[in-house]
Length: 461
Ligand SMILES: Cc1cc2nc3c(=O)[nH]c(=O)nc-3n(C[C@H](O)[C@H](O)[C@H](O)COP(=O)(O)OP(=O)(O)OC[C@H]3O[C@@H](n4cnc5c(N)ncnc54)[C@H](O)[C@@H]3O)c2cc1C
Image (cartoon, rainbow, N blue to C red; front, side):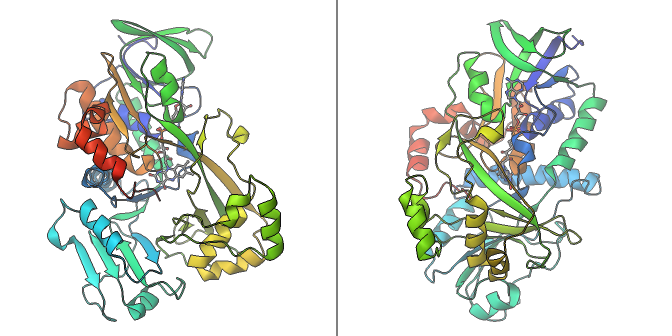
């Protein structure tokens, strides 16, 4: 079984999830008859839109374990490749104006409940010898755990750019940035070296008869592919691919946006870690703007309180000049579009809104509120989400079929673990203890589902 139309394992989707699954199949499990099929070039759909941020902060220990596992795997690759994908680690800075943050601390305690007891460190004095400020971006020297800064002087001194009304900073230390494009290039090369193949084609339908018979549209000479094992890594189209084998996947797509611009006025120092505002707030529209927005039912909601989560970070390393701003405030479900230009939830006002919101956290951005950058990119993609915002990795309920999907806004950081776990399911390898909780099996666990349904936070940033 070594030709392109008769393979042992077919992986549908050459985004970061499909590539990582093929990588672990080819490397850890020494599979060679692996075919990655995608109607597009690798990494060109959702995976091309990623902010490329990673963190091990989650309001549930299973998700903390899962992302820690992924970060371990990324660090292994970084150490054996001289950090070919530019992994950095200045942490995530989560800022709030609230003085009482018992709810945030409670979330941290739940998320890090399986970590060492000293992993949440409180700093309420002006000088904190035990606090290591994020001067270096080297992932190998950064501390683990979380630092909670509650002293105004310490906050001002460490993060002088943040708004003066910030009362508490939660500094997640195992967090930073990667280049998922470079990580995927490295993996694709290893897949190729191990005999894995790639095909640019669209999967139209699948027949199940002991093996899988896929009807494809692509290069003229191949119309069908037979495979023993099928991996659904189709990102926002995972439900469509699952439906081809009569499986109903509980994944919905939500469109989220970002902007990036050249920071010509040097408003953001290159050393600023990923910084996010936890507080909800209202944008300070002028009376005239407010009246115009309120008139239209489509935009009226912009005048009310908006959820927290706006974030800002420099992009391109110390020598770069770009800044990225994001805010995943959309909650409306979309039918995923093949052409993202047709997405109805792409808001024309988004660049202005995100800049205004980010300037509340980082006032030096006000210069761009007053005088918007002339050149900027406004882009976005889908978060394929389950209701609980946990991924779906593992058996699909049809013999030989698996999924690596539902990766929401965390697929770049979680791809290594998602791929390694999916590959382990396929080959009967060792899966971590929590793996069944990340598979469709969790829906039979009533206690877990009740806990997740009632959780105050789903870890969405
Ligand atoms: C705006 C935005 C910001 C984000 N920021 C971050 C971040 O900072 N950190 C982070 O970890 N994650 C982030 N994410 C999430 C991350 O980008 C995704 O979780 C990840 O890229 C998903 O990868 P994927 O392989 O599952 O999907 P995709 O990259 O969409 O790949 C799926 C592939 O399947 C192919 N396909 C589908 N159906 C078929 C078919 N029938 N036949 C052939 N091919 C098919 C598609 O062409 C596509 O290429 C962000 C996402 C967005 C939208």
